[in-house]
Image 1 (cartoon, rainbow, N blue to C red):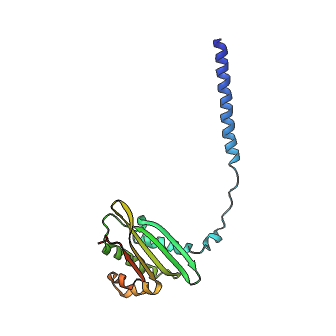
Image 2: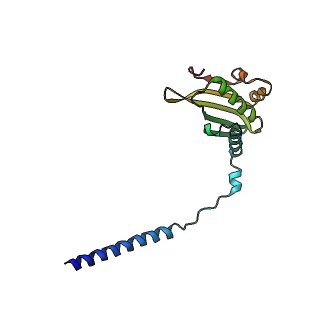
Image 3: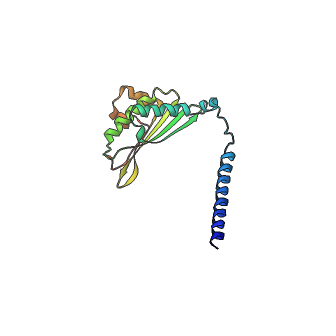
Length: 167
C-alpha cells in the first residue's frame, strides 16, 4: 500500500509540474503580440501638449512641481486656457500664495498660446483639502503684472476667490 501511495504521489506531482510548465509556456508565447507603433508626429501635434509641457517646466523652475495636483489645457480657436491646481503646505498664507501665483502668471507671458489661466490653491483646513484661493487672469491682465507688484493681483485679476480662513 505504501508503494502505491508513493507512486501515486510522484505521478500526481509530475502531472502538476507539467501543468505549471505548460501554463508558463502558454503565457510566454501568447504575450508576443506586437504592440502598435506610436506615431510621434501625431503626439507632437496634440492640441495643448506643448503648452502643458511648458507649464510643467515653469512649475519646475518655480520649485512647485511637487505641489502640482492637476494641469488642464483647453485649446480653442483664440488660444488656450490653462487650469492649474496646486497643493499649498500646512502653513499657507495669502501673501505666500500671491507671491507664487505672481511668479507663475508672469512666466505665462512667455507662452504665446495661453490667453487665459486659472490657478487654484488647495490646503488642509480642519483635516480636509479645501480650495483656499482661486485666481483667474486673461493674457492682458497677466501682462499688467510686468509693471505691478504681487500685492496688486486681487485688483488686476478677472476673478479672485479667497477662502475665509486664509490669512
